[in-house]
Image 1 (cartoon, helix red, strand yellow):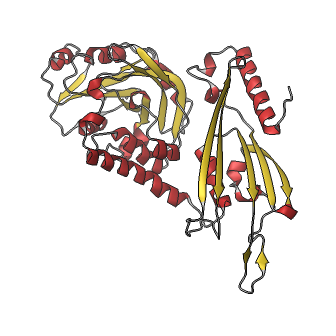
Image 2: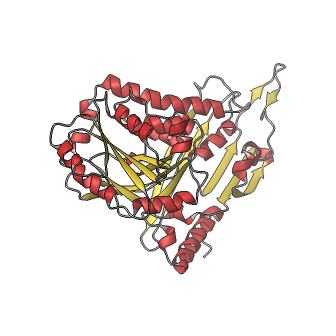
Length: 398
């Protein structure tokens, strides 16, 4: 029996003779890892098959299908690799990508999905934009859309495909987004690896939007959103309060900031939640904190006005609170240093939170922290920590 390869690369193919050779060569030239390259061609008629037949190492299957999702699923079922990905015929892996992913994945046995950064390239291969690999959040995925690229994402076969996780073959638009939402809802562990791994080609033929009817797109996005909404409801605990919100509102303001001399960019989000009646914004804290990977959090809570009990007595605060921290999950609090400033007589509560541990890789753009000299890593970490301490304390210290 053949030894299990490190990777199975699945490429769905149909009439892409212009680009398919680049795709194959980008995989064929990978070193430092074992792999099989499975091509699922739906019956190309433009010369693609002639090119494919010229590469004897390919595992070529020519089968009609109902669309890309079905073709990819067929490849998934044939895969034998420890890690599986699909690479479209117009995309390409960057040199050393598989060896880098193998080394990283070996260090993360908890990962079900490993994904990296990628380039958007034009029709002729010119780099248009580099995309950073951001930490995965199901909430961000649902509300802002897919921000992972299939061309730079790897699935652990034993915990995804072999457990029955396949593409929804009804999906012909954003099938990867619906798939990742379903994996996220199932609790699969997404681990980001902030290294450039692949090129995603952006050209007229692969822009799905002009070629799909609105009702089809709505159906795709509805299926994707449903996974997130169901998961959000499931996560809510017994503190969840249901009631009318016709006199409540949420506002948000964003403030990106960058100084060229420090090379540190900050992004501030101000969220103002105002409610009335039995609904308290305190019950949203875990959700809001979990939706943003924040380093510094400033929380202000004020109870204004009054209500009355059945006898007519005024109630200026109708719930017990000694600290905002009482309403934050213990696991979240454990990641932060927190300090309170409260004025109980005025029902004013204030909490500042500062992240305890820094993962340097999360703060770098298109750079692998392990490739930096130790002194450079130390200098960057020190600069980040100084910046955070000053923002946390609200004054210039250094």
